[in-house]
Length: 576
Image (cartoon, rainbow, N blue to C red):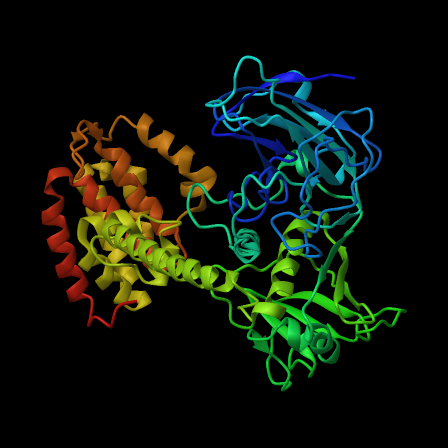
């Protein structure tokens, strides 16, 4: 079977994409000369061709195929030492599929049940797009031949060909090189890769109109998919196995937070001795002995990996949901001679498998190098500091905007609450000092000012020429409540009666905000109906504001008179 189609590549790269989210690890962190895992959902393939066409094909299999290489001998090994975490697998005999110069594998998370092979800049072919595959974890094998750079390629050379084979799996075993041409070698940085993915997992969405997307894409819903395992195997130097066997938690979390003294809390009270703690931003990762399990092994009981909330979050708006509410089991197995180690993290969410696999790669590296087991924390602390600075900047901006909208000073909580039902803020813009003086008055004095302002509005607009309006005002001034019919149906019937009354003047005024040709009666009448507020301060605000704007360009004169009236009603208490 041939099945090759043309695929345009850029910068010697193409991508295998298995999900909506492509964020993750950049290139040159982990990988070999053919494949660079880029995160849970994407990997980058490398070509000899810098810019141009190659031939590619993809196929979905039921299980892992044999490894097929060219007849020419290859040096064993890859970018890692033989027997290391990415040791080349056993090579099979040549099969019908053909011969390959380089072969590499990695695991991707594909909850959508579709994957694509496309150029770095987005171009693809129908045969390589939205290829159906069982939902869940998939193993991706990339194999290539004739990867000649275009500067040395001739017309007589065969075309560069790449094949992508995919099959479903239930565990992530990490990326590995099966056949290596040793053309491109660089230092592996699994700690940086793990940190990049953990930062993406543990950083809260920022505030603002364009927050980082933290919910799954609709097509990536993983509900109902089974949990999976993360497996890592490697050769370890002498002494590492014994140290791990003696104190697995201490060896794996050395240099991080420790709860060996039983005094550190992480959202669950005092932690018992034998619990290691890895910092994780607003969260903590607990690694402890004594997990439920039926088997004993060379190390002892299984361990438990559990996410918990930190007692003191670092972000201004911290994470409140755990990446996984369920704890997972970690089994450590060491060979009899102490030279080989296997870690199996069982029962993790599929979308976390690649990330946790890289974390385990780094933790196992730390057994030998003694480096920081939580390299993501420094980045999270820096991001949290920036988030706090930004939150404080946004808070100050919001305070300034609010102060400007309230006439130069932020309101009290009482005034802020009244703004939802009155014209407190517009009155503050006209005269913030007057508003504060009103708020400082005793309730009885506020009621007296409200009635005074309502009379000023009614008389200034000539509404008292309508007998029924004059009667209502006199009734209220005598101490009676506002008639119910005046405010029923939000005052619409009363307004309609006012507009139909021929005795009411149709005077046009210019409002204090400069809006011309406004009917004076329409802004003066609410000063009367506003007396219906049970809260005397609300009634005062409505009456004073209505009276002020009904005075049009003479509103400043009214406001001066209102200050006199407020002062004459009694002493002013401190601001409300």
